[in-house]
Image (cartoon, rainbow, N blue to C red; front, side, top):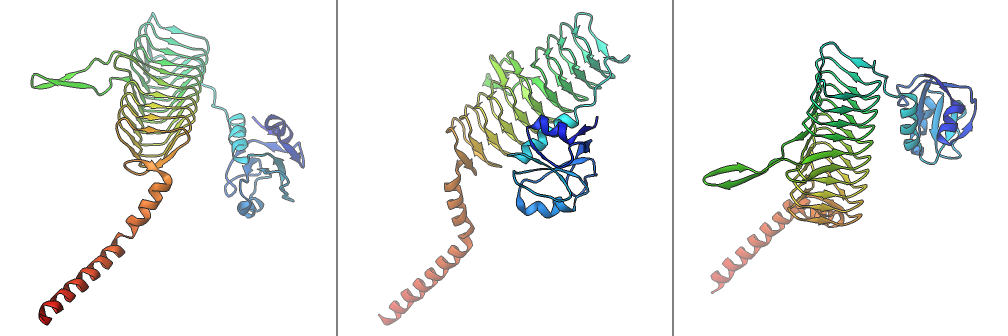
Length: 347
């Protein structure tokens, strides 16, 4: 649905420069945007790209001027752009109803305006909230609870008893509530430790494709409000992740680790068991956090084993100089050896 620049300015609380009746239908990058797309400027060096763009409306910092554009002045153009995109391009509404090939248990509770796609399976005593979409080949295990206005893409699997809040989006291939990896060795073999806990996912969480979140062993795996998890992330049993934390792809979080609120975890980070990342902590890409380690509030760590960023950079600088230092040592050893030989000859 089209909106005008004036309507968008009102929605964003932006200051409008130019024609408020300009129609805006979507969003784009400066190079591929059309005349009815919205673009944004977040650094002065990109101003030439904005000038050349076919887009006629731009989000820009206060006091920005573009003669050929309608300008919406905002303090944070990138954030305003994301907010505008969600408003301009909401999820296409799914057609409510249950597909003829879906299997829905008689004891399942399905609220109004729910869409259940082809070949989906909804087991006994499950509950699905109003306005939720279950994509094709989705599986909702016995006794699971899904809140209102969730969107489960095709081939999402919820094991029995999983709990999802409202407005949760889960991408294809994700598995929620599978058994954790816990074994005890005895009598010559590995015995499986009980995996009988639950998994609870709060409101406004997004879970990427092929991510796996294990149920608790005896407790509950918890994902807090507003958490965003990328593709191919493994969250083990009893892990707790605080509100509005973001986790990038291929990260693995081992059992019973606790991550605070507003933390940031880069790609391919490895977090061993029983670790604690306090509120606002940042783990850079490929950081390795050993068992039981605490990353303190607001601290940024990098490397393996993870250490404060400044220390990592200092050590890495020396690491990069190792070939040079090795050559210097070789020359010193050669000179020392030659001097020793000369001393023997003098004797």
